[in-house]
Image (cartoon, rainbow, N blue to C red):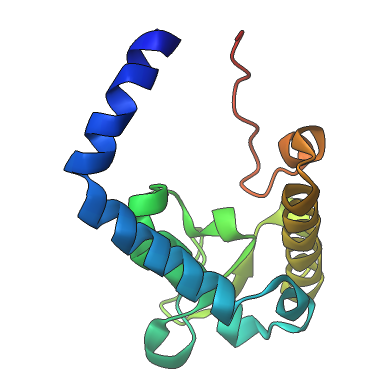
Length: 148
């Protein structure tokens, strides 16, 4: 299978050259707007889906603008740790900050923990530490390991 894939990569690169170029542009823009050193000081309104200037927050951009780099659309908003919206269990229609309980006891605590997890993930990626990357569970789940 690996040989089959290796033979097809040049063909795929030519077929999807425009899409790959656009994906690289999106990635470059996102990294420019959210460099590692900025993550710890990110404000909640800049981060949370449902907030941000023109609703263009960190999480919105990950989910919507960078969709071609990895689809996460359709999952519950609490996968981001903190989000702005209506609580699932609430019959109240008012919006407020919500958080995934696994990150803390309130949205401020949860947001601090999520930012640290993002920093840990990016630091691990920077040095190529695949074990550390594997153990950062931002989404709450860990992918199955393949037997390659």
